Amino acid sequence: MVSISRYKPKMIRQFIDDGYWGAELTVDYWERNARHRPGAEALADGSMRLNWAEAWDRIDRLSGALIDQGFAKDDVVLVQAGNSAWLMLFRLACERAGVIPVFLHYGFRRREIEHIIRTTRPVGAVVGGASEKFDLPGLYRDLRAEHAGLRKIFVMEGPGEPEMPSIPGLIENPPPGPAPSAAAVESRLAERRFAPGELTSIVTSSGTTGAPKSIEYSVWPRLASGRVYIKRLGLTSGDAVALFLPLYTGPGDMFYHTAPQVGARQILLETFSPEAACRLVETEKPSVVILVPTMLHRILGHPGFAAEVFASLRYVSCGGSVLPYEIGRRVEASFGAKIVQAYGLMDCGAVASHAADDSQETRLRTQGKPLDGTEVRILDEHAKSVPAGEIGEVCARGPHCNGDYIGDEDATAAAWRDGFFHTGDLGRLDADGYVILEGRSKDIIIRGGQNISAKEIEAVLAHHPAIKEAVAVSMPDAEMGERACVFVVPAGEQDLTLAEVARFMKARGVATFKIPERLELIDELPVTPGGNKVDKKALEEMLS
Image (cartoon, rainbow, N blue to C red; front, side, top):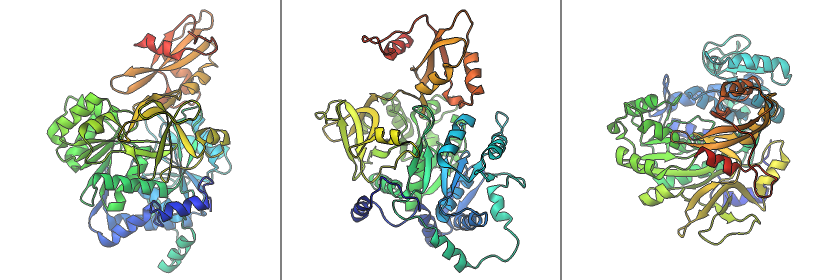
């Protein structure tokens, strides 16, 4: 058993007594739906469509296969794969078999992956297939040779091979010999069942302060958040929920925990593009789509956009960054659906959301009301509550919050102070208690909903021989919200180009989405009045 240390026994009992947490796991809802609605459609991606009975059969067999492969209770397995029905089924099988998956950003490369291996000590990994741009299975072959604990590598789909079998192959080609009885299988699964407060998965941050952090997740806070969404939006088994984001994101994680509770149909978009998104909505006719503002901007600007395609939608659930008001107005006018924003952080958990009966102005100008049981405080730089309506740092606590940072006590202590998670976001509470975000205190750039650490960019470029100083800042962008720009003071007379910056960072294993998209050469960096800090605000103003 791996308990999350922040969840003290008294806290767990209180959350259970107050009705926020229960005994159920997310996978239990799949079993329940398979019993009561076996023929109803449960899950679809671009190549697979399963009803609840078919999905449960695969989850059940895959759970047993994980045990047959030698995975013990609380073993850790890295998961780095794109959206697919098999990814969903694998996660559910892990939950049932007592195995802890670690979800990695699909763009992570050696630099980030090795850090996560050192932090979480996995015994296995499941990865997506090779592409023209990158051989991910090849990288993991190398990592297995270099890290003795990383014993078993699987590919998520495809034919697989003897040293790297596929996840579907585990149930299509079971080991020889008689299969254990159903009672024996249930007995060994019962011994592995997670209990409230235990670690059930690990999610990695994008690396907003350098190396990515590994965050303790447990299903119970996420299920509690899902129940609030269900209540506020009136979701039922008649809904179909489409996810345009990767499953490893915060909204993706909420999708995983929410829809099965009411037996709603779940639809995965494997890779986002405006064309693919419009095609999915036209074909599948979801009632809810989950995305980020950048995606909405790209869909609205797509030459083939037709508003009537989106007539099936009741809600457009938007998170990841603040939605521009005018885009929200245009979406509601075009789609005939309500925008509902959700505010939370990968590190903290869900914090606030809207309800179906909130007014349009409330839904487009705020990030929602704190979830049931969540206490939000707006604090000044001295950790004192500010008067109502004034701006400060948004801090939260309650039954929807995640655990600590694994292997990083300093970061945990900095984030969790006096029982509250300090988000680093600046905001205020309006007269009705709705959260309104006003900016960020953390030094991060949010590119299309993905967090980029300015400090990480600066630390890598500090080693370039042609760079004396480098400072990364955010530049506004109509499509992505923000992009990274790096200001460089050159070392000597050497020429430096954006292409060379990209080459240098890629060679050091930095994920592609983190690489700056604009380079500005400058003779001297501006400093704040005290003279001891670079004036990043002045640099950002140069870009406006």
